[in-house]
Length: 99
Image (cartoon, rainbow, N blue to C red; front, side, top):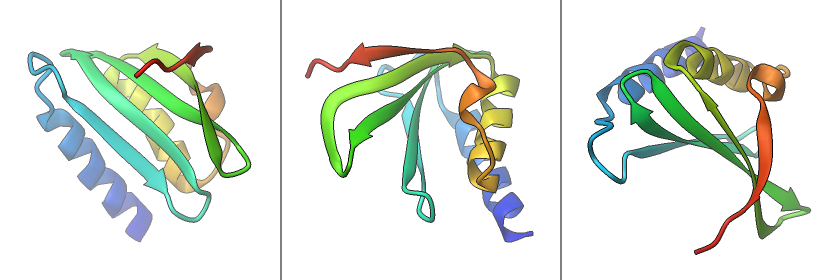
């Protein structure tokens, strides 16, 4: 299953992220759904995730933000790439992104 090979690759890339490095984020896009999720490794087993909230094709600066451990986040990504309902994997809060 090509999707699962890709998923394994992604998980191995996530494992390489050094949480002591400040800009340790990784982003994933599902090209067939257009969905995007970005992850930041906060600690050895601690992740921050955000998902841009788009209005049509425009991004107004709002996003869904949530936290999870490695297993929760990798399980969520697996669903994300299988194109099944993944959003309920973790609790989200709406945030405004300030650049």
